[in-house]
Image 1: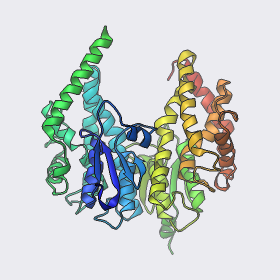
Image 2: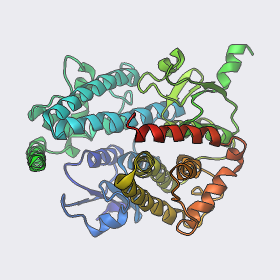
Image 3: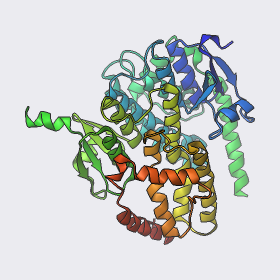
Image 4: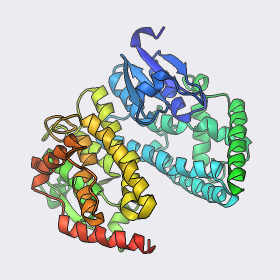
Length: 234
Length: 230
């Protein structure tokens, strides 16, 4: 069932944080059992494994749960150091740079993106979009610095940051179809090229979510948010 | 050995006296027994050097070692642990699962505890009462996790203790200023003991937080919030 690794991943198909973990496992060539959590009702196993946050992804290894995508990624890298490529570089300073930009992606880019897509008012969403574009412009610079002319954030091969940002690409493409353009070929050409390159990798493509399904899911979420906002306005 | 080479061996820490994130880094350097040069930033007038070393966030702490800057206190802590791996005591444990647990609990301060505590400290009335209850709820989670251990890290302070460190000196100040006790020995026996253990631990006790100055500062901050100035 789980294969020799005794790895189980609790996830939800649309979650970019879960995609990150799937990408890491795929890149390392690790087999695992995947458990799809229902969007609205959380399983006993999930609540038991992540009582503090009650969220996916949760990776369960030898029965012990690990939560939070950045922590899971580092765990996979460390617990399976001998298997497949390393996600984080060996040098302490290079590792610090990778962790810095990962924190930036979650704390700054995602926060802005959430406001751009789920903000209650037109103004809030416009402000969120403005912030998103500013953070993406900064990430374009980060890519330039980290890749040093090579194809990935990790250099010649995929690394931690590629996986970290890569997990979001399904939603980047879905939102583009919904009219929200995150990566612009004119403003952030390096990131646009990187996204194409990353998505087409053999270990990546099969793991990425179905964009048309994400578009439908996104429409549903937006409709729900609009209804909630309209309800609050009464 | 010329002076430039000598200088590059000593890391530089850009800080601000009142920042718990800076203090965290100082204590981490002390755990490792690493000497450092300290530069006090006047935050309303940030130095050109700081802006050059941390253009993305323009904040302290920033640790510069061998000419290369590292920013974000939690990132700096891991960097210190790795760059000086063979010196002093370890900050993170060796075992991958224990490291994952340490990283998880280290985020608790920022993700779960800080928001309600700050709300409790900067509001009044019902809003403050609700924030107080929310803070207690989160502290109880920590109490359960600590479960009578001397430190979150075991026998010695580690990554989690450093990350939660400000609880040991900022909350008592907040209690003093608001006149409301939060971490009582009765409700939080483990956390209460931990606070004293943390502040008297070797790396912390010889570089204590500036309590009087912090109290005056936080007093002024609370007043400004209540007046609606912030």
